[in-house]
Image (cartoon, rainbow, N blue to C red; front, side):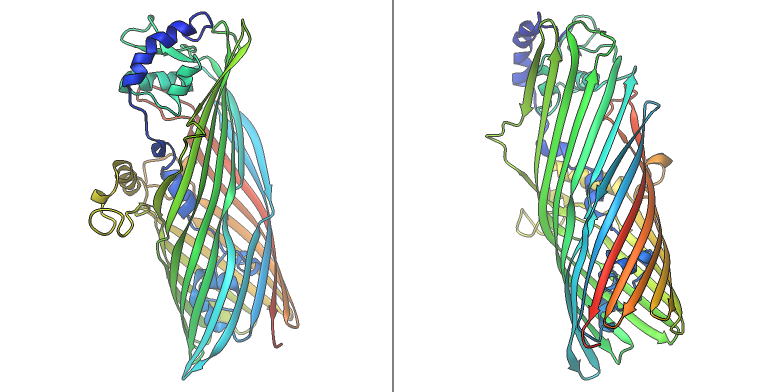
Length: 513
């Protein structure tokens, strides 16, 4: 079998002509997929403590920057220069199930949620104008997942060998590295197969550690005008920035010594993504009745240019003699970042709030989220013709856009919140539910990525100062194949359930009180 120290030179001399004729898989095909699109384009909840305490149901309310981030028309209710800031704390606990083995992992973060300034600028007839600006962190990517299990059905090496045998192509970021490390090579024991691995029976211990970090932030500029203090119009223009890093350390170990001289190998991957783009929102609010306030907002699709660096490496460990063979791709001296144009999801929000005098309120927001048109776009002047037509895009982008159309659907989000005022104190509760972004029938229930959040909050007013606190509990579940499977393979699936506990503290100061 291949991989033994006594045969590696023979393997290399045999397979080099095959490598010279084979095609390698392009870099970008290994990095963009539906998970990336959803990671960057799925809306997060409100970022202030008052909004969080009410489950983010603030689209028809005023007086808080969290409301402005849902519906810019909420800015029209500001009557005095107002400054606010919010700090959060978040603890994530993952329960991971892989090959009937359970493992646990956790992550703790202290994100700065928002800084904002809102100020009235004067009147034009019956219209009162208000401007605002703010910085908010609407998504934190921090995550750490670890899992392990003994696999008797498949292995990554077996998958790579099957892929080479069926396609005749070597992958510079996977199977090609395994070949260079002596893990793949020619065999004479499998009928009609050219390439085999050091693990023909796939009796191996598999484990992986995945680390994610980074953030998505918004610098927003807002304008709103209130007509006779009853109807508000609003507009937001902003810049969204993205910094994201994903690391994976995957290992296969021959713990029962099925293959002499072979011990284990590591497959290391790292993806770095940076970029920025623009987004916009339009909003309308009104109070047709003293006890009823309504709102509607539309968030346009973000357009961003993203730059990616993708690197992989294989480290093979051998005994008799003891040695390590390390291979990497691409060469750090020749690596160039890959640049692509990302198109996010749009969102339509309908809101309503019912008031009980000045004692309390019940607020409801309902979103429709356009996941199906996320993907890659052709920028103006970036190719023949104009617009986003698939014919103007490279083949990989066309395929990704089609996959998005087929596998995703219109998402929905429901946010329900209540607030009760008792003198200078406020008490809040909320609930948020997000539907699965995937089309029915394409995923099993454990991986549909529905989200649920339960929230509690409180506030205290002291003159011009307001202090708000909130706590929330979030649950969701998801699953992933360890590696893409060919039709003849039965591969393992890692299933994970997330329980997130978070706290937020915010302060607000209104000048002139």
